[in-house]
Image (cartoon, rainbow, N blue to C red; front, side, top):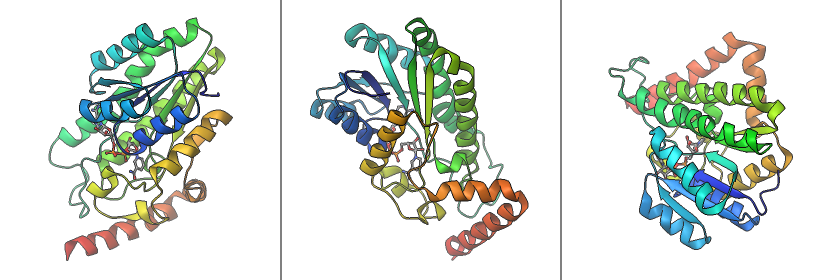
Length: 264
Ligand SMILES: NC(=O)c1ccc[n+]([C@@H]2O[C@H](COP(=O)([O-])OP(=O)(O)OC[C@H]3O[C@@H](n4cnc5c(N)ncnc54)[C@H](O)[C@@H]3O)[C@@H](O)[C@H]2O)c1
């Protein structure tokens, strides 16, 4: 799909990868880019630079996601591309004392933002996309959704679930001309990466959000399901499926090193 002349929504668009996506879509000629973020002031600042529009929105709340969709379509016309990009880096424990944690909170919060938000977008856009013959979802997930995130069971689990939902979304609605891409980078130089413990996510180098946005744009133009800004991830996926036990053993070594580094 070409984004030129299209109405595009980006959640978590006020910072990092989302902001870079907004800039890239604007430069590619989108008719209107809507920046939806829980940080309303930062969303307005991004929108002001790209003649876009901003909505304060908590993607964990269905009514907020629905409001963004309804208001965008009322003010600017049909949404062609909805990017569920908002995310949080919660639940990190580099020592991994207990993968089950000691409370539901980090799991529930990550579940709401990384999974339910994507489901809400689909729930309210699928009928609209079907009625007008198609549409596009770009879901920012992570290489952690395909591999794992050493040091965060909440992040790993919810990003895997997000991949599962996106696969099913793509399968269920291919016949309706609805396309889905998942954006799965490793480390990207953003506030989120800076807020979590340093780890293997940066092993192949941290990319700039602008580079990742360019890769996303190319993936959307080519309608590719998995977009891998770090191409090494494909090799890691192959090694994982080739021999799961060897892969778990390798990841456990990385975990042991992390425990040692952070335990000092
Ligand atoms: N930075 C990385 O290394 C990296 C790697 C892989 C995947 N990702 C994913 O990329 C996405 C963007 O992350 P980023 O690195 O740009 O982070 P970031 O912290 O720079 O930006 C995230 C944005 O999401 C917004 N946000 C958070 N919770 C929200 C909510 N409930 N409702 C609406 N907006 C909300 C924040 O206000 C912020 O503007 C996330 O889904 C993240 O998991 C990041």
